[in-house]
Image 1 (cartoon, rainbow, N blue to C red):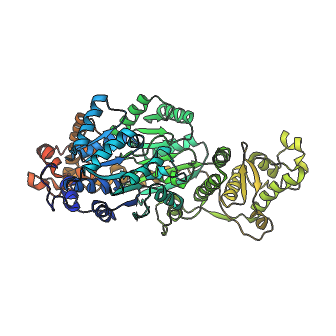
Image 2 (image 1 turned 90 degrees about the vertical axis):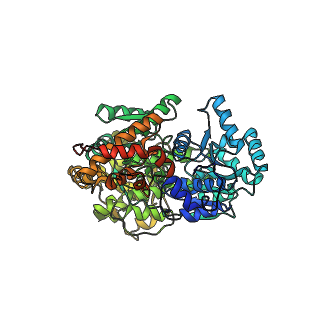
Image 3 (image 1 turned 180 degrees about the horizontal axis):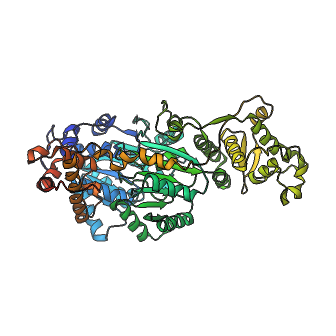
Length: 634
C-alpha cells in the first residue's frame, strides 16, 4: 500500500506502520508508549540514549497522522547531514519526506515548499533558524488553517538549555510553536540531559503538560576506558592498532590545530584519518563527512563540531585526546560508537593539564557566576569519573539519576586498579600548598609544588627561598608521575582547586580535615599502560572484530553475507547514500542466515519493509542464489 492510498484504521495504526514501512515486528522499550502518545495528539519529552531508536518515535506518529489526513510533520534539526540521511532512508522506505536547508538550489527549495503546502509531504526537516522565520511561520499558519500540520518534532532538544552541553540560541525561539499552534502535538527528543537541562527544556519549550519518557542511559555494548596521559599520541596509536585496526572511529581533540596535526600524524602512521573542525572550508567538511559515512575503516579526527546526528552504525570506537567539558558531552560523544549494538570502545586519555585548562576556560568565560558555578560542578563530576577506582558505568549512570550495579565492561571492572592509603601523601601535598601561602601569600602550579615536595633545587625554588620550607623534600619517596596522580585525585575529591591561566593551586574548606588526619584518603595507584594489554585486548576482541552478526555463521552464510554487502555498496553508490541507509548489517545477516528463496520468504525479515521488498526483493534473491561459497569475509 502506498502512502497516498485511502487511510484505514488498520493502515494508520503504529504497529501496522512499523511492520509495513520499516519492517520491524515490535517496538523496543518505551517506543510504543511514546508513539501512541504523540499519534494521539499529546506532547512528549523523550530522553533516550544514542542508538535507542529516537527517530521512530516521531516518524511513526508522523506517518500515522498523515494517513489520518493531518498533513505534514515538521522536524526541527540543526544538522544538514542528518536531514539528508534521514530523508534518504525514509524515501527508501516509501515515505515521502524532504528537507529545506542551504544545500538546495532556489528551484529545489521552491519544489519542496510546494510539496509541503500541498500536504503531500509526510515529514519535512528544517533547521531552527528557518522554522522561526516570518516566511516559514506564515506557511505553517496556512497549513494549520487547512488542518495539514500534523506535529512538531524538536530533535537535539538539549540545545535549548543554557545548562546543556551544546546550547544554541536559535533554539530559544522554538517556544513560538506552542504559542501559535497550541493544538499541534510536539515531541522533543535528546540523548542526554541532567536535571538542570530537563527542567530548562520543559520551561523554554512550554512542555509543562507533556509526558516525560526517560529510557535507560545504559549502553552495555560500550566499554569505557580512561587512562592517564603518557605520550598520548603513542597511546592512541597503540589503542587503534591493537584493538581497532581497519575500523571506523572518531578521535576528539580540543583545538583545531591539534585536530589537523593529529590527523596528519595518524595518516603518516598508516591509519586513514581525516580532520574536521569549524575552521575548515564548508566544502572540505562536507567531503570529509561524506567519506566517513560512506567508506569503511576511516578515522575522523575532530573537534566537537563533528558528530551530532551522525547515524553511522559501525563506529567501533570514540577516543578523546582531551578531557571533555562535562559528563553530558562525554556521554553524547561516546554514544556515537556502537550504534549497531556490537561491541565498541569509549577510550579517553587525560592529565592534570586538561583539568587546569577546562577550569581556566570556565573561569575566563563571560558567563554569570551562577553559570560558572554549575559548570565547575559538572567538570568536578567528570573528573571524579576519570579518577574513580570503582565501576565507571555505575558512576556514569548515577549522574543521570539511574541506579545500577558493576558492569563488567569497563577498565575498572575488567582490571581493578590497585589502591593505597594516601592519607599521609595527601597531607604532605596539602601542607605544601599551605606553606606557600604562609611563606609569601602566593600560589604556585603543580610543577613547582612537586619540585618542592621532591626536594629539587631549581632556579624557581632558589628564587622564592622555598628550600627553607618544612615541606621541602618531604615527598622524595614518590615520583613526579605519582605526585601528579595524587594531586589529580585530590582535585577530584574537592580538596584542591587549580585556578587561573597557570593553574595555581589553592585549598578548599574540606582540606582542613584532611590536613588534621581526620579524613582517610584512599587513592588509585598511578599506572603506566602495561605493554601486554594491547595483545590481551586484541585476543579478547577478536570475535568482535569479525562482527557479532557474523559470529555464528557457517561458511555458506558468510559467503551470502559478503555478497549482500557488495551488492548493498553498489546500490548505495547509485543512490548517493551511506550503505546503512539501504540496509543495516543486521538485516543482511538475517538474510544470509535464512537464505530466502522466494518473494514470500522475505516477509518477516527485520528491516525489510514493503517498499524495500518491492524495490530490492528480486535483486536480493538473485544475489543470495549466486553467492559463491568460496568468498572470503572482508
